Length: 373
Image 1: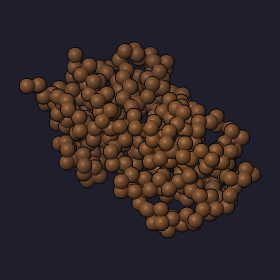
Image 2: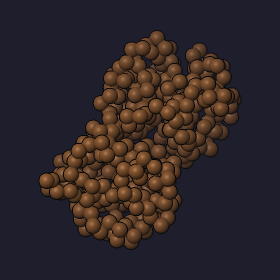
Image 3: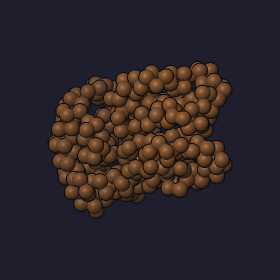
Image 4: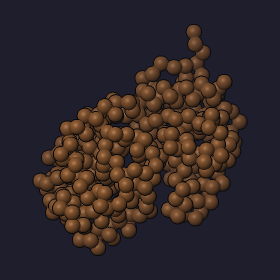
């Protein structure tokens, strides 16, 4: 009989609105619950996690911290005081938030989602930048193994932090089997968000500067016929980021209040419904460690138009329209989407079929095994 090995997963950084990085680990947990392996997972999370992720709490023991961990200071304090006590019995610790506590005396796996701060430091507040420049390289050095979502991030760790490549393992995002099953209906969403009867495009991203929402607003305000269509609605989902005020100010300055719909953070049922009804998911981000929304779109059979930056070409491959970030290159993108919709939908679903929660979990299991050898 195979010996069971207890693994702790530190998700103390998973507070509401975190977005893609939380989805990444939650989906891996779903995959771990479906796969056969020798590991017993215990999840350490903020207060309220079990209520937000009832499906995870049903499958795994979830030990909630005595705090919602809203601030970094509280999370770090708990990682150095509460976490070592409650995780004493585990043989391996998996830290999912990109940093490793100093109080770490056992084998460890560190998930690094990206190091955007190293390539775009001007987008990061000075205090946070100093923190990341100090803590992330130290964490990467001390971790037994490092899991990253893409080869792009693996290469970045080698280039910018000098991490040995044989220490890094790509564990791609994986979509859950039920993605889109509970999607809200188009009629419901059109009524709720006043989308009218015209075409809809969706950008599911937090309003951080590197997400480049301004690029789409410039397209909508351009003279290009498809983008300037008064019935076209651009739906911006995702939490409020550091560029929220600038984005909304630009919407107003360009007179786009009737054509841009800002939903903010929404439930997955509405997210899936909006994506499924869209002509396209548009993703002009300057930097992505992976870009899970493009796989969500492809899974749902929706064409993707994205930038050719960082990990996005690696993830989308030839299953979407990948373009340089200049206005002229995107001028006819929606025309191409409509002309090639069936082709792009089919190619996207074929591509997305590789990105499953089970495959992601299998890659993570292999990282656990290597960390313990």
